[in-house]
Length: 266
Image (tube, rainbow, N blue to C red):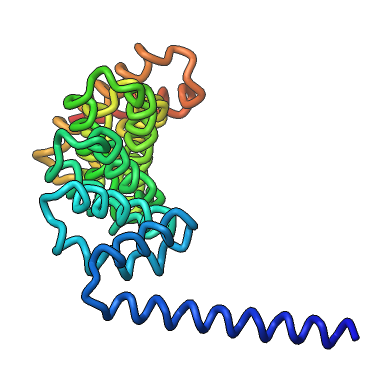
């Protein structure tokens, strides 16, 4: 008896669902845009974002530039956001902020457009296009809405993104070093120090620059050796000045001594 009841309930549910789908299909095909709008908003409020978008996609062009068009753009962005399609969500949030700069949701949309790109920012080893886009949009949001309650969060998100770029920059330098491209490694490390002067990698970077200059000097043609040994000594002094108790001190002192000896013996 229980099994029969469950079966009948399931059949009833399928019939109701099928009936609802048919009704939605008829509404979409109809010429009644007001009914389409009301149905789409009802689906949106019920959390049926995928089906709501079927109505919104039809109606956005119809209501462009109107109050309904404003809401449709915002609702579409929210649908994609809830469905975790952040790239398209960002597109519609940005479109809203640009099309309706004085709209009810302009400030929120400007932030969420940037936030979607923040969510799309990949791990440090991958391409960082979305990271740069998110940084640019977050800075634009801060500039546009300096009194927003979201300012602190925007700064925190930017710090997270910069930390990722910092790791990326450090890893690139280390990769060049391991590949034996010492000139590229040195350039990458020096750029890292210029862009992130307070980096947590500073001690390791200065140590790596010292090693890279020394190895580069050892492998250089005769005419270039002096200049690169001198750079080795300069890098050693920078490390010693900033980190007098560095964990790398013993190793770099050996490098520094050898650099001085090589200069004297020329």
